[in-house]
Length: 573
Ligand code: SRM
Ligand code: SF4
Image (cartoon, rainbow, N blue to C red; front, side, top):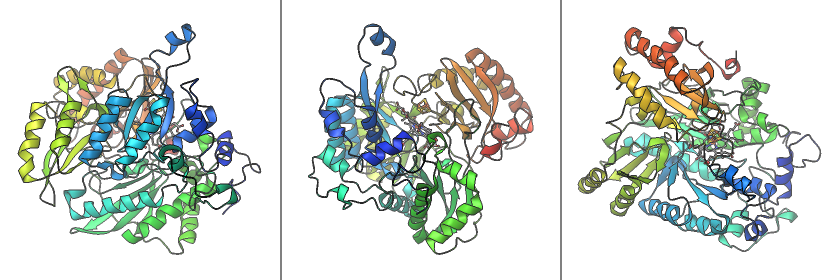
């Protein structure tokens, strides 16, 4: 272990979060006491830091923040709960449990996230324990859904497209399980398990993470070409499945991707992961573990904004990383194999899988499952879950696959889809079907502008432009986030909006259609009128002048609207 590992954070420069982790006794802190305190709906700042590792964030309803402050009331504290499921696969029973909790203890909606997890919003402190217990009773977990650990492992969302997909999904599950934290704190605090070992005596260990865990969050995704739904180049560690004639040969390894940045701080930037070699399937878990330990030992623990793995690699160089990895593995990576990505979006509607079962991908606008007047999405999915004998798969684009439907059940499921008017998005523009927006207001404490609540309206207006230009059925990837943290992976979209202030966005163009290239800033701090005025002519020109099969992002570069970005290091040039 290098000197950089702050197992004793007193000795080297470190952020206050490192002290909190160190003092926490493997994520216990005073969380139990904080949860019992009935005087306030909040928890202490230190415990809030630890709470993330347990899969929850304290938030407040920002729609009522000013009003409550005027009335001298404490903010409307509530908790977001994130539920992890590697590769996004859950059973109908698990879906019904999420639905039940959402109705009873949260805000009545379920949010499907950009990393194939669930989020519940609006849980009050007194209900947190019940919620986490109910999640665990159905064999799901919130542990490590957030925090400075490996997060939900993403994977191609349809394991039964072929045997290769099935095997890749199993590897995703193995990697996920291998990197789970070992602390029993979660079980003690939420599930009332007895404390069996006194970690202060060193009996309890985190064999991979150590006592202060990672310097920052860590993300892994596995793609199966030609589909890149997981946006493999946005991951700290990405694996690209290499398959030939229905056989999984192994994975190319890609390292050092990430989306987050801060407006006005050019030392922060989104980055695309770079491929460094090829490994066999049996080697993937070892590669994941050793990569995580390198980031544990060398990641920046002093400045959290600079603590992601992408900066560790960019600062020290990719060659340094390869050498360090191979030394820890005790063997060498093979040469990167060739592969080809075609898209990073979801394929909608019915498809038949290799297991002769059927799969239906539903379009869920921005991942929000709720009932609205005229569109009872949540009720419809509840009825489907009651009848369904297969599984559900959350996609990396915030959609949902009703998976593993037998030929006998297909009629029933199709009937329910029709009764509730659920949609595969065919009636919408291809732009909307390829859209993603992060949560932002009213729950996200970091939002600078609306996202989930605004993108659908903006797309309504852009659809008028598309109709005029004859582009309604042309697939263009569009994404929006309420701040530059990048939760909807905006830096990889062909068109993206990143919030600057209420109603104001930076507009970026030129991302690669298959998620292979970053986009570039085109206009700064503009509102809706300017957005439409800027994009209208570009879309019209694209319709007239594009070459055969040319994607919008590529056109924006060829036509000179933005320069091509080859690496995050050029993002701000
Ligand atoms: Fe995220 C922080 C929501 C995927 C980069 N993200 C947050 C928080 C927890 C806000 C906070 O720290 O107070 C947001 C909660 C909002 C709310 O009210 O629910 C939040 N992130 C989300 C989700 C729910 C967006 C969505 O619409 O689906 C996604 C949950 C994923 C999951 O299931 O695990 C989500 N976040 C992402 C992604 C995309 C991805 O991982 O594929 C990214 C960019 C990739 C990356 O990490 O580089 C992302 N989130 C961030 C960052 C910036 C990290 C950085 O490198 O600087 C933050 C802020 C932070 O960590 O300090 C953040
Ligand atoms: Fe919140 Fe920003 Fe993430 Fe959107 S991108 S959910 S506004 S942190």
